[in-house]
Length: 336
Ligand SMILES: NC(=O)c1ccc[n+]([C@@H]2O[C@H](COP(=O)([O-])OP(=O)(O)OC[C@H]3O[C@@H](n4cnc5c(N)ncnc54)[C@H](OP(=O)(O)O)[C@@H]3O)[C@@H](O)[C@H]2O)c1
Image 1 (tube, helix red, strand yellow):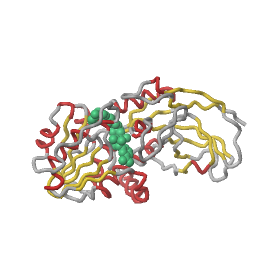
Image 2: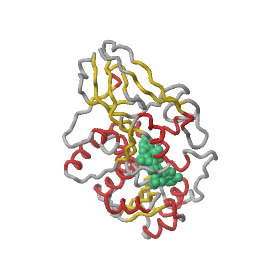
Image 3: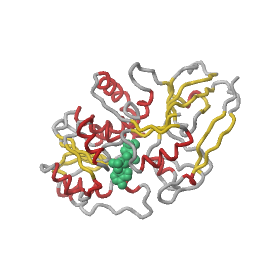
Image 4: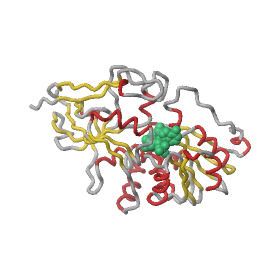
């Protein structure tokens, strides 16, 4: 029987503003022998995600806050290396929510079997073929009710959700897709690799002016990953009957001041706009349709992706902070 250790990352204290390494503790613990019905999984990739920042605060949200002294839970993909559960034999690829650790063991029910598909890297289960891809799909199709012929604006366009959203919008027949991102290199990538018709660097300022220059005829759909000035700019750019899917507001996640609301909310009245916030957990019934459509697009070579990979469980906190600083292109992952 292998008695492996597990290296885990815990929340040591609640960050104020930007998190630092001091808010976390890395500990290595020996694992007990497996009980009946349990499996032991060696993670291959773990995910660092913006929503985790919210869970580090002790505030009401759609998921419970992390506990001080508790492990940072979240998405991970790995392989069963020891099993006392016949439904998940050794070698099975699984997805789970145990989060920031290298090896994890628990009841088999806490893991979902994912079929290995030739040509599909396992890491994609954590983004383009998984949570962030599904978020983009739900936001566009279900929440914003995007239709063929719409002009779509996507903020945070070069990240995990944004790179999926731009491609999905195009494949669903958008007339024009416009993105914003935080560097000229990302802007170029959006146009060269992800099919964006136009993109701008929001760090050059005047977000509303830049958006208007690229969408002089207005936008029909806004997929908001950022909030703040981006949302205000979209409210100015909307055509009558425009629809917004409010997916995230990362511009405020590390802010110590209350974020200011848009000054032009009255456009919602005069233009008959609909803005709807959503969290993916309430839309999981769309996963089946998404998986088959995304799987088909992927097999047809229609889907591009990028990953920014940090090596080693001990560098997970750096990866998390770097992701929120915009050092990632596509999905930020930690390879174990
Ligand atoms: N509603 C849901 O169920 C759901 C699910 C998944 C994700 N989300 C949300 O979707 C958004 C994107 O998540 P993701 O996982 O795909 O992360 P991501 O976009 O891969 O990474 C975060 C990105 O945010 C950008 N960013 C950071 N600070 C910013 C600021 N002040 N203004 C504009 N952009 C900023 C950075 O790119 P730049 O270099 O461009 O600044 C960074 O790369 C987040 O808001 C997240 O909370 C929501």
